Amino acid sequence: MALARTQYVRSGDVDIAYQVIGEGPRDLVLVFDNPSHLEALPDQPLLAEFILALGRFARVLWFDMQGQGMSGHVAGGVIPVESWMDDLIAVMDAEKSTTATIVAKGYAAQMAVVAAATRPERVASLVLLNGFARFARAGDYPAGLPESAHERFLDNLEAGWGSGSLLSILAPSWAGRPGVQEWWGRVERYGATPGHARARMRAVLDLDVRDVLPLVDAPTLVVHSRHNDFVRFAHGQYLAERIPGARLLERPGSDHWAGLELVGVIEEFVTGTRSEAPDSDRALATVLFVDVVGSTRYASEQGDRSWEAALDRFEGVAGATLPLHEGVLERHTGDGVLATFDGPARAIRCASQIRDEVRMSGLEVRCGLHAGEVTRRPEGIAGVAIHIGARVCALAAPGDVLVTRTVRDLVAGSGISFEERGEHELKGVPDTWALYAATS
Image (cartoon, rainbow, N blue to C red; front, side, top):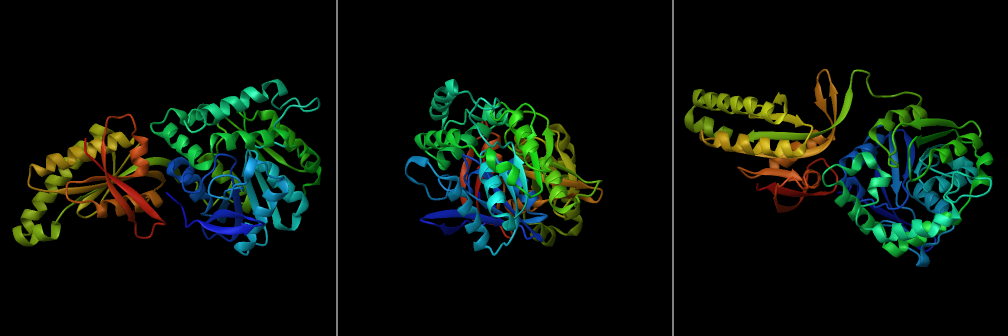
């Protein structure tokens, strides 16, 4: 799944892949460390919604750094930090961005601080997520990885690459979710080979940008997870102490990856305000649309009174079945219902039960499901996930329980099986989407 069309710009002799998300009044450049892949990372709804949420208040220029993901690779994987900075400027120039906030995670923070120090006219501010100036330990830098552990660290990285097993260290709160390890393994495989990943991290172990930190004039927010086992909290403290005027935000937990809870913090840092209304509530949910098939034909053939009775039967079945699967009826949609669930497997089983029960009364329904962020307000729920779920339902055949790949991946291990239904364009939603019909 891609959040936007992937484009390329030449930086030196290398092609750099990037996407543009959102149309906000400010520019924000987003860059992750390895592994990164513009079209594989968004398969995880938590991460996709984080990026989309940034695009609600800014124009996001998201790119894969040289040597990883969809961008061009170089032999040996060793890339000077100056080349990374050139890639950043190339992406900004391609989209006529004169100045931008850089949001950088992990070792991408090293590139970001060098860019802020050497090209201050292009960097409005910095947000450093679980970053560091140096990853290796030194006599005057006890936070880093000791030299005696370097080879063991690199051996483990290479041996586990492509399996997704490293997610237990990088994002422990995500690791237990169904399908997430499989997704992370795919991102690793798409992003780099095991040998290339090892070479890249060996180069990072040799890189030290501590001398640059006092030269950074851009307003800087350092966000670091308190119990991060991959990049220890002391790395973030070091950055905040040595970048003039930097603010340190201690994030609870141990995840190396960013989460939705940081969007409001970043927006307020960049814009001075939060656009999110105080009475709104964002959450990850599985969205289910159920529509009655052929309602117009049924009404014309059987009469309005018969149709109204049939619709009452459908709504009665849906109303009784949703609570059995912990579903929440959000609203009636004329000839159907919209419901949400906190678990995709329950949503699929609920949809199947509704379909089977209304079929016994002579009605046929189609069901569409997607998992993503929804926003709850007094007037009802909203969000891109709602639009995607509606588009999926519209493509479903009578009797189908049709789901996006996001839903399929999240229910891995649940015993639910699927048939592939190909790639489809969803009206008003970027890119093409792989869809699957639940069969059991």
